[in-house]
Image (cartoon, rainbow, N blue to C red; front, side, top):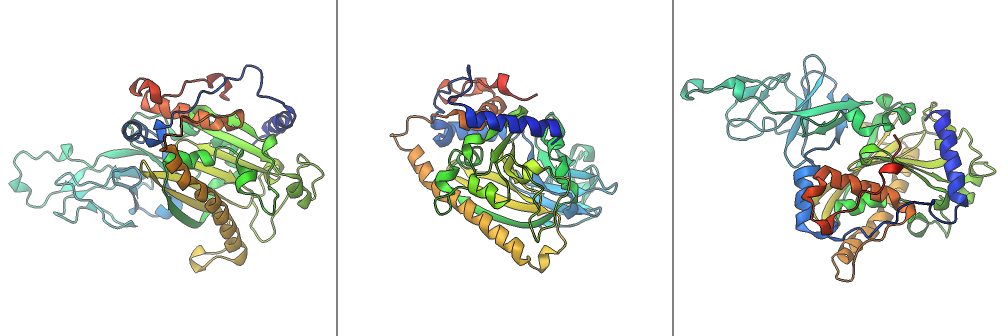
Length: 417
C-alpha cells in the first residue's frame, strides 16, 4: 500500500467511527434469496457458469522447481495436471488421456519428462501436450495425432502463487485481481514459503463459509476473549474492488492497541512480533490493524508482517464445503523438520479462531433450509457480501438466473477503479 492509500483508509476509518447511519444515498439492500444457498437450480448454475470461468489458487511455484515437476489439482471438478516445461514455464492440462480417459499421471506430485498414460501408454509432450507416441499405432485407422493433444488450461502466476482457469477466453489473472497485486507487493510474496496447511470439511454451502470472512460485524460476538474483542468493528472500512474482489481494514480495540504501546487506534507503530522473521517492507497501518483481502470467488487472506494464511473454500455439494488454510511466511527453518514453538502456537490460535466460525456454520445451513427463513437482510457493514453476490450473478449471467434467485446490481458506483 502506498502512503496515499494508507492515509485514505485511515480517514475512512475515522469516518466509520463517527457516522450515525450509512452514507447519504447508499442503497437499501433487499433480502438475499435463501434459495441461493439451498436450491439445486442455483448450485447447478454455479457449477456450469461460475467455476468454469474464474481464477482459483492451485499451488506454489517453488513446488515445481525443475522441468518435469508436476502436481495434480482436482478442486475444479475435472482433474488437472500442472507441470513445469523444459523452458521452465508452467503449463496446465486436463489430466485425461485422449484414448479412453484414464489419467496421464496418478500421483499427486512427481517428476516426468513425458506424460504417459498408465493404461495403454499413450504419451504426451510436457511443453505443448501433443501426442508423442501410441503403442500399436498401426491398428488405429486414420488416427490424427494432432487432433489428440492433451487439452490445455489457462495457468498463470502472481508472486509465485499458481492460479488456473478453465475458460480459455478469461481475462488475465492480474486483471482479475486488480489493485490487490500492487497493494500486496510489499508482502514480498515471491520470497515466502509454505509453513503449514490445515483443512476441515464443514456441513454448509460454500457461500456461507465465504461470507463469514467478508465482514467483522460478527467478530465481538463470536471471537471475544474474556468479554473483550481484539477488533473494533465500528471503524472497519470496506474496499469494494472490481470482479467481486475486496479489501477490509479493521482497527484494533482499545485493549489490543494499548498492549502494543499505542495511544489510540491510529497511533501506528512499526510493530515487530518477537521470534518471527519480519517482512520489513510492510507498512505500519497493516501492523496495527486487521487487514484482509478477498479474491473472488473463494480466497480470503488476513495479511500480517510476519506471514499470513490464504483461506480457500471448495464446494463439495450444495450442503458441504472443504475449507483449506495455508500459511505463508519468510522462514528460517524447514517445516518438514517440525515447527518452532512460536509458529505452532500461532497455528493453534488461528485454528481456534477458525473453529469458532465453523461452530456457527453447520446450524446456519440447517436454518437456511427451514421455512422460517424468508431471506437474508444485509446491512452497510456487510456490503462486501453484497458485492460478492453481485459478482456471482455476473459470472453465471444474470439472464440465466430465475428472478426469484437474483440479487440486484446496486454497487457499481461504489467500486474502486
